[in-house]
Length: 225
Image 1: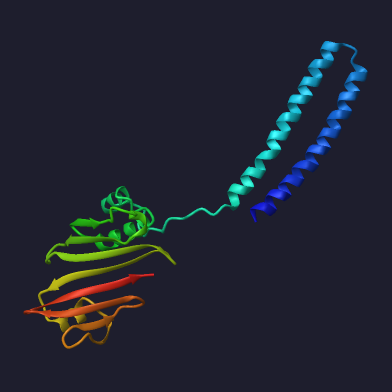
Image 2 (image 1 turned 45 degrees about the horizontal axis):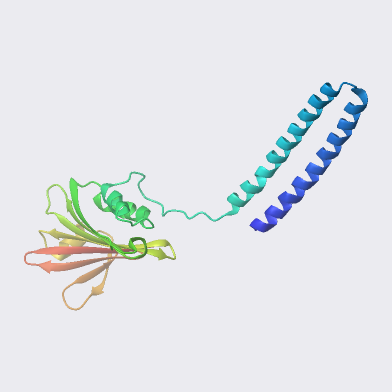
């Protein structure tokens, strides 16, 4: 595509340059015939020469622009929130560039409405931008115990950067009550083995409910498409 555009632009430049050059030559002959003063003629000819050079340089610029316009430019993954959080900034500093947009999106989603988070980032020391990155989070909320979340980010996927997360929280109520009150509308699709129930939450989303003493632990898992 770039070669085709370049050839078309080159032909256009050639035709326009030839047309202008013909007029310049005709005008130069006219000046030499009408002007007997050598000094005056030199000034006129110099001005025409400068104009011709400027025109040639100007006409060459679209060729460069056309090549740049058609060159593929890698686009970062889109973020659900335009603000760049501290976790994303640290991941970028460690070399995880390809998944920066996805990291920012998931961390902003998990921490939305919280009273604060703590994070530990796992970035490979070698080939950091071509290997999986993981982040562990403690998420603080009012009137309930802290929640734990773990995320994974894989670069060079079909969707740019693949991602998943699991958000774990404890509820001081039975799992049936958690399903009815906290995950209203989700359909129970069975159990993993004997005790851990699974609720369907949409494409790529599953909520697991695990009895824990008198309460229940929920694990929300999503594979981000």
